Image 1 (cartoon, one colour):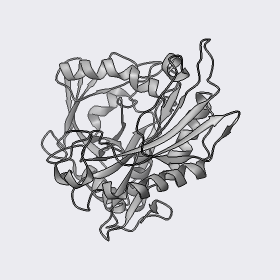
Image 2: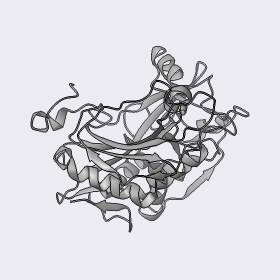
Image 3: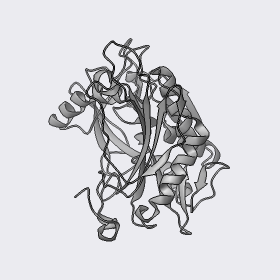
Amino acid sequence: MSNTLTKEKIDWSNLGFGYIKTDYRYISNYKDGKWDEGTLSTDSNIVLNESAGVLQYAQTCFEGLKAYRTVDNHVVCFRPDLNAARLKSSCERLEMPVFPEDRFVEAVKAVVAKDIDYVPPYGSGATLYIRPYMFGTNPVMGVKPADEYQFRIFTSPVGPYFKGGAKPITLRISDFDRAAPRGTGHVKAGLNYAMSLHAIVDAHKQGFNENMYLDPATRTKVEETGGANIIFITKDNKVITPKSNSILPSITRRSLLYVAQHYLGLGTEEREIRLDEIKDFKECALCGTAAVLSPVGKVVDHGKEILFPSGMEHIGEISKKLYDTLLGIQMGRIEAPEGWIVKIA
């Protein structure tokens, strides 16, 4: 699909998951120890010096969230305050100035309000993806943090991550490590995703949908995939997620655990999960902003197949309840916990 479509020509029901330029983006610059007041711009291009910190030493981090049109035709965002807090954590780890959390939320609201005609209609399966990000802008030669930064937010309408329903996918146990034991795996740094690109390309060549990474220290415990957290369902319907210092703290995972406990009455637990345990679980799924929840039917460990009882044809019963409930909250069909939904229009 072209990335220059006008909003009048978008076929909302057949959108892919890719970039489409919208009318406005938010920009704020950090210089001389402070952020400027920020602005909305129609210019989607960025001009940088050839020695900019981001280009030389990958000093950049980002977030991802969505705006939705609800059943009663309001435009809302889902828990943007948690994205603001996670960006703060990323900036602190990467020696970047923190963009104030309250300004982050206001900037998200401002750019969505200006691009509101790009928020897909309710029922189309599409949403407005929101990408806040920050990077070092001034020339840097020695290995050190930049002195000047730019914070930006752009939006793009996207279709559902899975066309034709959430069919279970296959993971392989990766021989690569996603993060170092005391590295940056817990922050949303661009470099973490660059590190996973070779592994995911190789997985696709071998016929797998994604990699399941193990803990880098002992390679005996489950961590996450290149772009999503993992959840498991036990035979007695407890929802379990891996616990590790090198896992990105997913807002979707956090929300699903709350939904499991407070909406579905299920037990939940965050703990270390050994690789040799996963054969005992009845369901497995990936969770993240893009797909909300994606069922996993099978994990392949160097030729040995671990097939979950939920199978390769349909999403598991508990996974479906989790997905339907969280999506219902986001779309306004189910009452949300206080503070989860931020109304824009």
